[in-house]
Amino acid sequence: DQQVKQNSPSLSVQEGRISILNCDYTNSMFDYFLWYKKYPAEGPTFLISISSIKDKNEDGRFTVFLNKSAKHLSLHIVPSQPGDSAVYFCAASERSSGSARQLTFGSGTQLTVLP
Amino acid sequence: GAVVSQHPSRVICKSGTSVKIECRSLDFQATTMFWYRQFPKKSLMLMATSNEGSKATYEQGVEKDKFLINHASLTLSTLTVTSAHPEDSSFYICSARVGGPLHFGNGTRLTVT
Image (cartoon, rainbow over all chains, first blue to last red):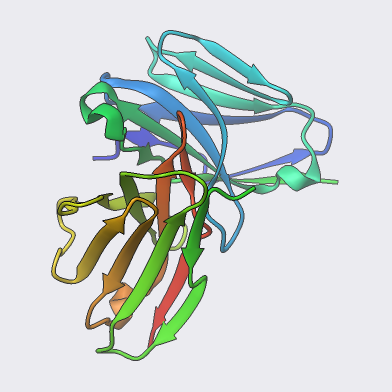
Protein backbone atom coordinates (compact mmCIF):
# COMPACT_ATOMS: atom_id res chain seq x y z
CA ASP A 1 0.00 0.00 0.00
CA GLN A 2 1.58 3.25 -1.13
CA GLN A 3 1.24 5.80 1.61
CA VAL A 4 2.70 8.62 -0.46
CA LYS A 5 1.58 8.95 -4.05
CA GLN A 6 2.75 11.08 -6.90
CA ASN A 7 0.29 10.29 -9.63
CA SER A 8 2.03 12.20 -12.40
CA PRO A 9 5.20 10.45 -13.51
CA SER A 10 6.17 13.38 -15.70
CA LEU A 11 5.48 17.06 -16.27
CA SER A 12 6.69 19.47 -18.94
CA VAL A 13 6.50 23.23 -18.61
CA GLN A 14 7.86 26.18 -20.51
CA GLU A 15 10.73 28.17 -19.06
CA GLY A 16 9.44 31.10 -17.02
CA ARG A 17 6.10 29.47 -16.31
CA ILE A 18 4.95 27.90 -13.08
CA SER A 19 5.57 24.22 -12.35
CA ILE A 20 3.12 22.53 -10.01
CA LEU A 21 4.00 19.12 -8.66
CA ASN A 22 1.41 17.23 -6.67
CA CYS A 23 1.55 14.65 -3.92
CA ASP A 24 -1.14 12.79 -1.99
CA TYR A 25 -0.79 10.79 1.18
CA THR A 26 -2.97 8.36 3.08
CA ASN A 27 -1.39 8.16 6.52
CA SER A 28 -3.02 10.74 8.79
CA MET A 29 -0.13 10.34 11.24
CA PHE A 30 2.28 12.05 8.84
CA ASP A 31 3.21 15.43 10.29
CA TYR A 32 6.30 16.47 8.36
CA PHE A 33 6.60 16.69 4.60
CA LEU A 34 9.55 17.30 2.34
CA TRP A 35 10.39 17.72 -1.30
CA TYR A 36 13.61 16.42 -2.77
CA LYS A 37 15.12 16.95 -6.19
CA LYS A 38 17.16 14.23 -7.84
CA TYR A 39 19.41 14.22 -10.87
CA PRO A 40 20.36 10.91 -12.54
CA ALA A 41 23.07 8.95 -10.73
CA GLU A 42 23.00 11.33 -7.77
CA GLY A 43 21.41 11.22 -4.37
CA PRO A 44 18.31 13.32 -3.66
CA THR A 45 18.87 16.93 -2.64
CA PHE A 46 16.63 18.48 -0.02
CA LEU A 47 14.56 21.37 -1.37
CA ILE A 48 11.92 22.46 1.08
CA SER A 49 9.82 21.09 3.92
CA ILE A 50 6.63 21.85 5.77
CA SER A 51 5.29 20.91 9.15
CA SER A 52 1.66 19.93 9.56
CA ILE A 53 1.05 23.00 11.72
CA LYS A 54 1.51 25.16 8.61
CA ASP A 55 -0.26 25.28 5.28
CA LYS A 56 2.40 27.10 3.31
CA ASN A 57 6.16 27.45 3.30
CA GLU A 58 8.10 29.56 0.85
CA ASP A 59 11.78 29.60 -0.04
CA GLY A 60 12.76 31.70 -3.02
CA ARG A 61 11.21 30.25 -6.16
CA PHE A 62 9.87 27.23 -4.28
CA THR A 63 6.63 27.15 -2.32
CA VAL A 64 5.06 24.12 -0.72
CA PHE A 65 1.35 24.05 0.10
CA LEU A 66 -0.23 21.59 2.49
CA ASN A 67 -3.93 20.75 2.58
CA LYS A 68 -4.34 18.45 5.57
CA SER A 69 -8.05 17.84 5.09
CA ALA A 70 -7.41 16.62 1.55
CA LYS A 71 -4.14 14.92 2.51
CA HIS A 72 -2.52 16.72 -0.36
CA LEU A 73 0.58 18.79 -0.83
CA SER A 74 2.03 20.54 -3.81
CA LEU A 75 5.28 22.14 -4.81
CA HIS A 76 5.18 25.30 -6.88
CA ILE A 77 8.25 26.47 -8.76
CA VAL A 78 8.05 29.91 -10.26
CA PRO A 79 9.56 30.95 -12.53
CA SER A 80 10.67 27.55 -13.82
CA GLN A 81 14.20 27.31 -15.19
CA PRO A 82 15.81 24.64 -17.40
CA GLY A 83 18.11 23.73 -14.48
CA ASP A 84 15.02 22.69 -12.53
CA SER A 85 14.64 19.69 -14.83
CA ALA A 86 14.98 16.68 -12.53
CA VAL A 87 12.94 14.08 -10.70
CA TYR A 88 11.08 15.50 -7.73
CA PHE A 89 10.23 13.26 -4.80
CA CYS A 90 7.65 14.00 -2.17
CA ALA A 91 8.39 12.46 1.25
CA ALA A 92 6.64 12.27 4.60
CA SER A 93 7.31 11.15 8.14
CA GLU A 94 5.15 10.54 11.18
CA ARG A 95 5.33 11.24 14.87
CA SER A 96 5.65 7.59 15.83
CA SER A 97 8.99 7.27 14.09
CA GLY A 98 10.41 9.45 16.84
CA SER A 99 13.73 11.18 16.47
CA ALA A 100 14.78 8.80 13.70
CA ARG A 101 12.05 10.28 11.51
CA GLN A 102 12.09 7.68 8.78
CA LEU A 103 10.86 9.01 5.47
CA THR A 104 8.32 7.46 3.14
CA PHE A 105 8.82 8.55 -0.44
CA GLY A 106 6.50 8.95 -3.38
CA SER A 107 7.48 7.48 -6.74
CA GLY A 108 8.68 10.79 -8.13
CA THR A 109 7.72 13.15 -10.94
CA GLN A 110 10.10 13.91 -13.78
CA LEU A 111 9.95 17.64 -14.44
CA THR A 112 11.22 18.92 -17.77
CA VAL A 113 11.51 22.66 -18.23
CA LEU A 114 11.64 23.55 -21.90
CA PRO A 115 13.74 26.55 -22.96
CA GLY B 1 28.49 21.48 0.15
CA ALA B 2 27.94 17.76 0.63
CA VAL B 3 27.28 16.65 4.18
CA VAL B 4 27.06 12.93 3.45
CA SER B 5 29.72 11.19 1.41
CA GLN B 6 29.16 7.79 -0.18
CA HIS B 7 31.74 5.55 -1.82
CA PRO B 8 32.06 4.06 -4.36
CA SER B 9 29.75 5.84 -6.77
CA ARG B 10 29.71 2.90 -9.12
CA VAL B 11 30.71 -0.74 -8.80
CA ILE B 12 30.49 -3.75 -11.05
CA CYS B 13 30.96 -7.16 -9.53
CA LYS B 14 30.55 -10.78 -10.44
CA SER B 15 27.71 -12.88 -9.15
CA GLY B 16 28.59 -14.52 -5.85
CA THR B 17 31.02 -11.87 -4.66
CA SER B 18 30.45 -9.33 -1.89
CA VAL B 19 30.50 -5.56 -2.19
CA LYS B 20 30.97 -2.99 0.55
CA ILE B 21 29.52 0.51 0.32
CA GLU B 22 30.64 3.22 2.71
CA CYS B 23 28.65 6.16 3.97
CA ARG B 24 30.33 8.94 5.91
CA SER B 25 28.91 11.95 7.64
CA LEU B 26 31.08 15.00 7.04
CA ASP B 27 31.67 17.46 9.87
CA PHE B 28 28.94 16.02 12.05
CA GLN B 29 28.24 12.91 14.06
CA ALA B 30 25.41 10.65 12.98
CA THR B 31 24.17 8.13 15.50
CA THR B 32 21.60 7.05 12.94
CA MET B 33 21.97 6.61 9.21
CA PHE B 34 19.48 5.25 6.73
CA TRP B 35 20.06 3.01 3.74
CA TYR B 36 17.71 3.29 0.77
CA ARG B 37 17.45 1.43 -2.48
CA GLN B 38 15.99 2.73 -5.70
CA PHE B 39 14.82 0.58 -8.58
CA PRO B 40 14.60 2.16 -12.04
CA LYS B 41 11.80 4.71 -12.23
CA LYS B 42 10.63 3.75 -8.76
CA SER B 43 10.53 5.37 -5.37
CA LEU B 44 13.31 5.21 -2.81
CA MET B 45 12.66 2.28 -0.51
CA LEU B 46 14.03 2.30 3.01
CA MET B 47 16.06 -0.86 3.56
CA ALA B 48 17.37 -0.40 7.07
CA THR B 49 18.23 2.04 9.81
CA SER B 50 21.84 1.91 10.89
CA ASN B 51 22.42 2.61 14.58
CA GLU B 52 25.87 3.44 15.93
CA GLY B 53 27.05 0.83 18.39
CA SER B 54 24.04 -1.46 18.02
CA LYS B 55 22.31 -3.66 15.51
CA ALA B 56 20.67 -2.22 12.47
CA THR B 57 16.91 -2.23 12.14
CA TYR B 58 15.76 -3.80 8.90
CA GLU B 59 12.54 -3.11 7.05
CA GLN B 60 10.16 -5.94 6.32
CA GLY B 61 11.30 -8.05 3.42
CA VAL B 62 14.95 -7.01 3.60
CA GLU B 63 17.30 -9.91 4.29
CA LYS B 64 19.63 -8.94 7.10
CA ASP B 65 22.08 -11.72 6.25
CA LYS B 66 22.32 -10.49 2.70
CA PHE B 67 22.61 -6.80 3.43
CA LEU B 68 25.04 -6.50 6.32
CA ILE B 69 25.15 -3.12 8.00
CA ASN B 70 27.88 -1.98 10.32
CA HIS B 71 27.85 1.39 12.06
CA ALA B 72 31.12 1.22 13.91
CA SER B 73 31.68 4.92 14.45
CA LEU B 74 29.69 8.12 14.65
CA THR B 75 30.74 9.09 11.15
CA LEU B 76 30.75 5.83 9.23
CA SER B 77 28.15 3.24 8.27
CA THR B 78 28.82 0.45 5.80
CA LEU B 79 26.47 -1.70 3.77
CA THR B 80 27.84 -5.00 2.51
CA VAL B 81 25.88 -6.83 -0.16
CA THR B 82 26.91 -10.44 0.36
CA SER B 83 26.91 -13.11 -2.33
CA ALA B 84 25.54 -10.62 -4.80
CA HIS B 85 23.19 -11.72 -7.56
CA PRO B 86 22.01 -9.86 -10.66
CA GLU B 87 18.72 -9.03 -8.95
CA ASP B 88 20.71 -7.05 -6.36
CA SER B 89 21.70 -4.62 -9.11
CA SER B 90 20.28 -1.30 -8.04
CA PHE B 91 21.03 2.22 -6.85
CA TYR B 92 21.83 2.28 -3.13
CA ILE B 93 21.72 5.57 -1.23
CA CYS B 94 22.58 6.38 2.36
CA SER B 95 21.36 9.32 4.34
CA ALA B 96 21.75 11.04 7.68
CA ARG B 97 19.86 13.75 9.46
CA VAL B 98 21.33 17.22 9.78
CA GLY B 99 18.90 19.37 11.70
CA GLY B 100 15.46 18.77 10.23
CA PRO B 101 15.70 17.07 6.84
CA LEU B 102 17.58 13.99 5.78
CA HIS B 103 20.59 14.61 3.60
CA PHE B 104 21.63 11.98 1.12
CA GLY B 105 24.87 10.72 -0.26
CA ASN B 106 25.31 10.61 -4.01
CA GLY B 107 24.42 6.96 -4.17
CA THR B 108 26.15 3.82 -5.42
CA ARG B 109 25.19 2.18 -8.68
CA LEU B 110 25.72 -1.55 -8.20
CA THR B 111 25.75 -3.82 -11.23
CA VAL B 112 26.08 -7.55 -10.68
CA THR B 113 27.05 -9.52 -13.75
